Each structure stands twice: as C-alpha cells, then as structure tokens.
Image 1 (tube, helix red, strand yellow):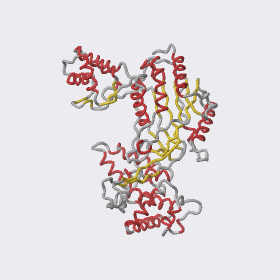
Image 2 (tube, helix red, strand yellow):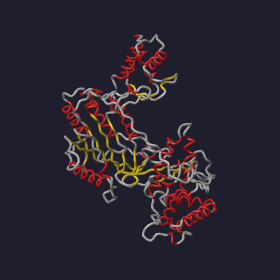
Image 3 (cartoon, helix red, strand yellow):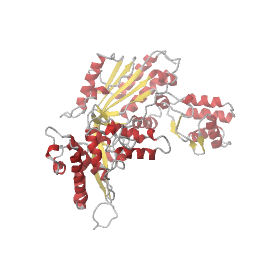
Length: 545
C-alpha cells in the first residue's frame, strides 16, 4: 500500500467536502456518519464518496483493502467529529497523534506525573488494537476530537498497523505504555472458616434500544470481547441500581447504609435525638475527626459508607463524653449494614475501617456483536410564531440494543463474618432479587427500556465462583430466533462442557424462565428466592464466624 497515494486521496476528499455548498456538505457528512462502526462496502450509498479519485491499485478484490479501510475510517470519523463544529475544521494537517496525546496528557495531569494520566491509559488501548474495527472504535470518542485533527496522517498509520510505533514522546520511537505497578500485598484474615460457599447468579436479559450506561462522551459503553464490539453496562451502574432498590422497595427486608459526604449530618441527627440541648453539628464534626476521618465544615473529604447503627453508636459515645478515640474507631468497624457487607467499604484515611466486599458484580456484556446507532431528534418551540420554519433544538442521541449476559457472585462466608448466618441468608436473597429485577436508569425517559430477564441460572458452589461469560467469547450470530434463544443454548452447552472438564457441577442449581431446563428445574422467581434462602441457611448451619 502506497501511503502517499492514500494520503492524497483522503486530502482531496476533505478539500472537496470543505468547498461544497453548506446544505450539500451537511447532507454528505450525515451520510458518512451512517458508516461509522461498519465495514467499507456495507452501505452502497457511500461507494461513490469512497471510491471517487481512489487509484484502482488501492482497491481490494476480495474484501476491503488496507487503503480502503484507511480512507473509509478517515472520512467517516471526520464526519462524526465534525458534527456540531460548524465554525471549526476537525482537520489540521501536520499534527501527529503522539505529540497531541502527550500535550493533552500533560494538560489534564494537573501537576501530577503525566504518564499516569487517564488520557494515556485510554490511548494505550488504541495502541494495542489488533483490527481496524477496534481502531475505529477507539477513535470514535469525543475525547479524541480535539486530539486527532490530521485525519489523513492518523488513518494511514492505523491502517498500516503502525499505531504501536507512534511515540507519545512526540516523535519517532516506541509507544510509551503506562508503567504497571506491582499489586500491593494485603494482609488476609488469619482466623477464617475453611468452608467455602459461593452463590453465583447468571442472567440473560434482552434490552431494547437504549442508552442504559454511557461514557464520558455520552455514548453507550462498549467493550471488545472475542474480537467483537459488545454493548456493556458497568458493574458500578448496576450496583447503584440495586442499592436504590434496596432502599425504595426492600427496606423492610434489609438494612441499608449511606454512601455520602454528609456523614457528620447523620451523626448530628442521632445526637439531636439523644441530647437536644447540645450543639449537635459541632459535636458530630469532632466525633468524625476523632474517628480518624478527614472532614471540614461541609462534611467528609471523601464519600464515606456509614450505617445507621454506626451513626447512632458514634452519637452515644459523643453524648457520654468519651475521650478514647479507639472506641470511635471500633464503633465504625462494628454493625455494618447489609449493603456495606455486600459491596464493601474503602477508607483511604484509615484502611483498618475497610470492609472486603462479599459480592462481586461483573460488567454486563452483550452475547453478540453490536454497533451503536444515532437517533436524530428535534424539539419544537411551542411559543414560536406560526410562520417560523425549523425546530427550536436539534440533537442526536447514541443508542444500541442487545441481549446481555450478566453475572454476580456472593462469598457467603465473608458475608457471615460481617452479618452472621441468619442475616447473611436474608441478605443473599435480597441481593439476588435486586440483581435480577433492577435496571440502571440512564436515559430511561427517552427509551422506556425497563425489562426483566429472559432466563436466570443460580448455583451454590463450594469450590470457587465460576463466571460463564466464556459461552459468548464467540459472538452469537443473528438468526430468525433473535439473540435470546441462541444465547440460552450457548450458555447451557458451555456450562455442561465446563462441568465435564475444569469444574465440578454445582452443589445445587436453580433456574427461572425457559430454555435452561437441562441445568435445573425451572420455578417462579419468588419461589426460587425462597428455596435459595433456605438452601443457604442449611449450608451455613453451624458456621457462624
């Protein structure tokens, strides 16, 4: 592939777009944006724009050539990043990716080591991309639009697979990777029950067009898995939805805590209830400081997870006039709420106050490949004159639809250590119900995407947790049956193969919905949760720690 010819071809196309009349230019850019995330040749409407002025020797005979990928990626991403930037050209000849990334990394480092910048970590993912679709995916974010301003130069490099050799130091050389730190060794509990018990939750759930969880650019989050771009919903988004459900719908079944910077206010409320004549807020601020948590007049410096029982215990010590700071720390260590035990607590000011999370929640990914789409919308000005033309507002929203594989696991012995056996069994039932029924609320008013699972598979294991995402390492192909039914088949077959090779079959299994009958007898959700709680209670009998 002759790079100068490709560069010249892209440059001619960009110049042609810039001199077109405004209506025609906008129309062509909109057409090009439709090609983002697709392969060259997928959209016949783009053939003329892509093949115009392209030398015949650069065109592929059996599929897109590297040259066609370069031109296609350059023009479609240019059109995407040019959207909404009518007064600014998103093409500035001569700028290199390496120097631009370093410039932005230094700018966002805020006086810290720029090699630790999140910008650099993000572009390291670009450097390790091993296919043009993945390269295109990483170049799409709006965070890239102020960095990548020389589309011919950048897209020639990516199509030649030379991104890895671009220097973040601003010139030729080796792409600098963020230094990997050695993992810190943590001290484990010495006294620990040798018995193991894990409850694994596997959920298949179809979500219609939606933007459940978006990134910093407003796009639905995605991940590359098995060489294909998948829809993704972060674990943090789903855990937040679960905690909201705990509070709003399950407060009678489980005690919840507060993750907040207003911890002093929680303690002050308890002090007021015990001693109305005291300056509750001032006393609460002193208590929080004595407990070793950094705070000021506005509250704690960082988010702090606190249960109502802990706030009450601190208030009682304050009203009693306790001078022993160790007692304040002990009050914050004891009596965690169920969600604190499940999701953990990290206290940078004092690691002794940390709780190891008993539950782990995986990022949800689609069982199949996806490509994000754009919804172009307008809003009408209700008070505009009747003879006025046009809309009061124009915009786009990015979305996708998918069948998700969701996984979570609960370490029951860790939960027993924090809550006791009886409360632990109740907590895992509530956790299971919230995990199965909850849904993150991103853009829900625009898409009304609240759904329930297609199938649920729950296991009790005494060896280790087992994530079954390997069932979808090879993306499920589209078929007349959609994606949900083939996904159930893939999950079932993978689990059975795994139990015959690397892992023992679960001690007990439960399913909800159809399609997984070979793994366990299906039952209604509420029945399954009740049976699960009882089974856990029996397993935990005599295992208080």
